[in-house]
Image 1 (cartoon, rainbow, N blue to C red):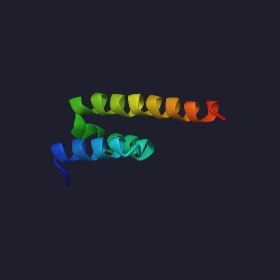
Image 2 (image 1 turned 180 degrees about the horizontal axis):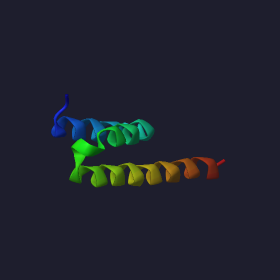
Image 3 (image 1 turned 180 degrees about the vertical axis):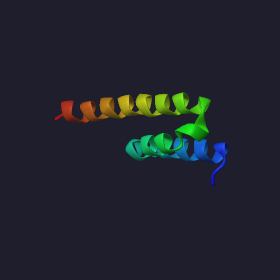
Image 4 (image 1 turned 60 degrees about the vertical axis):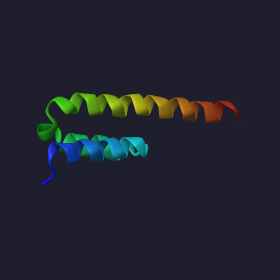
Length: 63
């Protein structure tokens, strides 16, 4: 069983690796343990997803 710090670190690692689908799934699986950290982590996933979408749009707009 992971403690709260390990769960948060793993979630942040997944986000920083841009592994957002996996990160979101992991965060959802640990929602109860995360408590107040849940909203912050979900927000991190969302803001990273927006950044990735912008990068993808840039890639396609350059062609």
